[in-house]
Length: 160
Image (cartoon, rainbow, N blue to C red; front, side):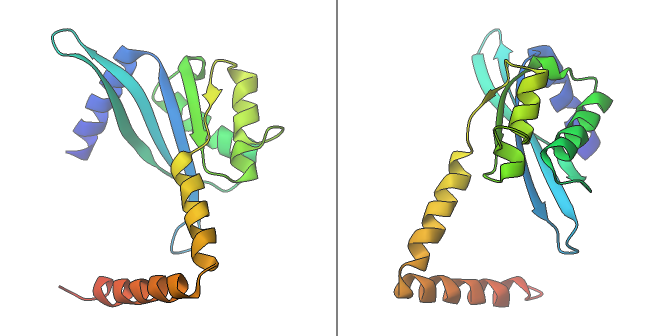
C-alpha cells in the first residue's frame, strides 16, 4: 500500500512539474543522521480547482552532514525518481548553518544549481526555538515541561 501511495504521489508531482522541498535532519535512536524530505506542489483539478499537496518523500541516512553532502544526498534521491532540480521553485530548511547557510549551506548550493529555488526559512522551527528560549527563562515553565516529558516517557513505554 505504501508503494502504491508513493507511486500515486509521484505521478501527481510529475504532472504538476514544479515543486518545493522541505528538508530536516535529525539523528535517530542509534545516532545515525537521518534526512527527512517533503515535497510540495500544486495539484490542479480541472473541475475542483487547485490544491497544495505536501508529500512525504522519505527518510534517508546521510553520512556527510555538510551542506555539500546533504545536497548531494538529496540530489541522488530525486534523480532516482527522474525529477529535475531545475523544476524546484522553493526550499525550506531547519535553522542549522549546514542547511540555511548563505555561503556553503544547502540553500546556497541549491541556488547555484537553480536560482529560481527561492529560500524561505522554516517558520515552525524558528517558533520552536523561541518557545525553547522562553521556557528556559522561567523556572515554572521548566518544571511544567519536565513533568510533561516524564509523563510522556511513562506512557510511551507502557505496552497499552
